Length: 64
Image 1 (cartoon, rainbow, N blue to C red):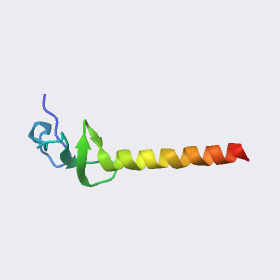
Image 2 (cartoon, helix red, strand yellow; image 1 turned 180 degrees about the vertical axis):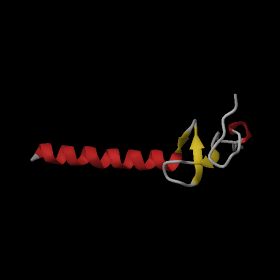
Image 3 (tube, helix red, strand yellow; image 1 turned 90 degrees about the vertical axis):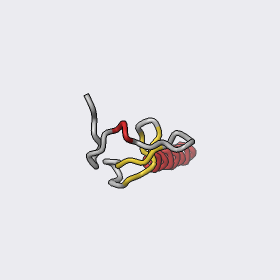
Image 4 (cartoon, rainbow, N blue to C red; image 1 turned 120 degrees about the vertical axis):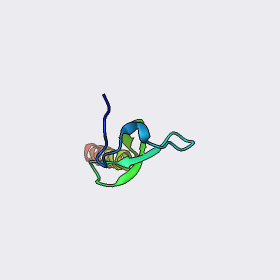
């Protein structure tokens, strides 16, 4: 069974660089971005930034 990305290329044709990252289409952000272990690096970075901001708001609200 072979799986294809949004561009119609089989996943086995991904080219990894020396750090283990590869470029493929991300359905979430709609761009051809760098991926690591199946997740989009820019989307992961946005998620972590938003999580940090949410935690800071909760801490500030609890502080009074």
